[in-house]
Image (cartoon, rainbow, N blue to C red):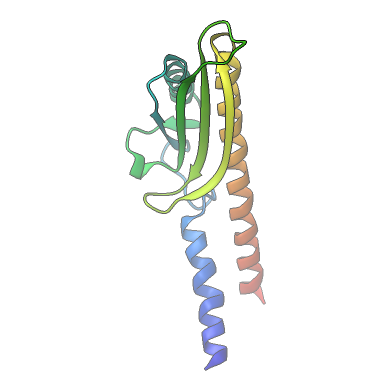
Amino acid sequence: MKKAFFLLSANVIPAFFLMIMPINLLSQQSDNRIKVYVSHRGEDSIGGRIVYEVKEKIASSSRYHLEENEDSADFKIDLMSFDIKLNNSNGYMSAISTAYIWGPGTINFFCGHRVSVCGTSRTAEEISDVLSGMDEAYAHSNATAKFIFDWYMKGIKK
């Protein structure tokens, strides 16, 4: 009985992860681009500008596709921003929190997070940082998926 349970858990649990992990070989879309949903919470102008530009860059990307529906996205960027006033600031500044989430539908895995302070003169750099963070987080989730896939396939061959 214990051996049967082990065989079941050794095959079903990794198979579950294989079904939901973002391995490009197993889950290719028709246009082979990663579907990304971008959400924003905040009323500040800098955060709004950053989100707009991030969406534009994703929409024009050959690797990513801007997804309008959160439930059908492969990857999510959740950006939250608000105005701040620092004693030494000359102009508008925003605090920005960005979370990177991988997940098909309602199954979500936290992949990374970054926090920054951004002024009007640093928006281009912030946009680049948000997109670089997305690339790193997605690469990390793919590496994790590949590790699980390789481990599972090694077990099958025995």
